Structure formats: C-alpha cells, structure tokens
Image (cartoon, rainbow, N blue to C red; front, side):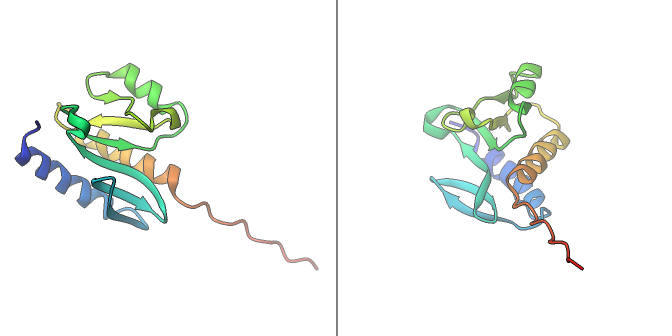
Length: 125
C-alpha cells in the first residue's frame, strides 16, 4: 500500500500542473483520476493499481519515448499494463524524481492527445 499523505500531495501537484494545460480536464476514469484533453485521456493517476504497490502516472507518450525513458531510468519509468502497447509510459511518483521531469512527461502526453487544428482552406481566386 502506498503512503496516503504522499498520494494526496502528488495528486495535488499533478492537478495544479494539468490546470495550466489548454483544454485539460479531470474526471474519474476506471476508478482513478483521469486527465483528458477533449474526449481523449492523456494521463491517469494510479495509486496501487491492482495492488502493484506503485504511486504513479500513466501518460500517453510520443513515439519512441517509452523505450527511451524506461531504458534511461527503469527505477522511475515503466511500461504500464494495458496501455504500454500504445506507447504510454508510467512515471513513479513514490520515487526520487524531479518535478520538472514529471511536468515534461505530462506536457508531452497532453500534446500527443490534443486535437489537431484543422488546416485552413485556401480561398480560390
């Protein structure tokens, strides 16, 4: 089981950062706080998901980022169940990790899942 006080503190940090992302919202999803842009989830806050003992974020990631992050620091980053096949990355929040790194992963997750602007049609003369 994870430390409830740590979980509350880390979730508060995540919520504060997510609030700064354009179009981001939070809603309960699969029993955990989920973070969305439009109708697409970009991150989940997981506290001891299926008794895995982790306090973590599961985040969408740009292509290749999951392998790079997990290879660079497997104590902090991991391939989360269910969504690893989609390239998502897990970030342990119960380990020593710089908040700037967590924020960068969240920002990248948001960017990957945000709706793409529609191209403007050119006016024909």
